[in-house]
Length: 186
Image (cartoon, rainbow, N blue to C red; front, side, top):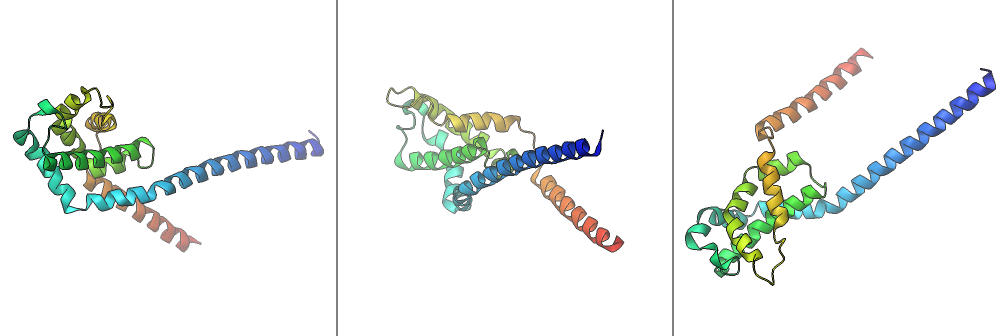
């Protein structure tokens, strides 16, 4: 191969690499921008998760809902207090499931926030939701994203929160040590 051919092949190779790299970086920027658009919703969700009212409603849904009410009337048959608690808790976790389904948060982040809670919530409200779906004026997919996420979360075998925190700590300190020792060698 003569010198001119070699330079042409090299120039084309560099150009192809540059196009591929540009496409990858562009796709990555789109993904970052999309996730940034969801950040306010995630922050609102986290603020709601910190509220004592949501936790009180969660305790009510798990502990007292099935004792105080029968699912015969569906969700519409609940007292105003019970209905408020069920809808607040159910739609909180459905929003979390939506962020997971859209790829805004990954499985580990979602499981850290919800862990077994989402499964317990679905088990507590499922008879009420299933009865409500039978009414002709109700969408048959009412809270189906929550139902699907509860099924997925039962199958997810995540490390414990403690294991996740220690893994992140180890990863960060390993990088720090690498940088520190890497700087000393130079």
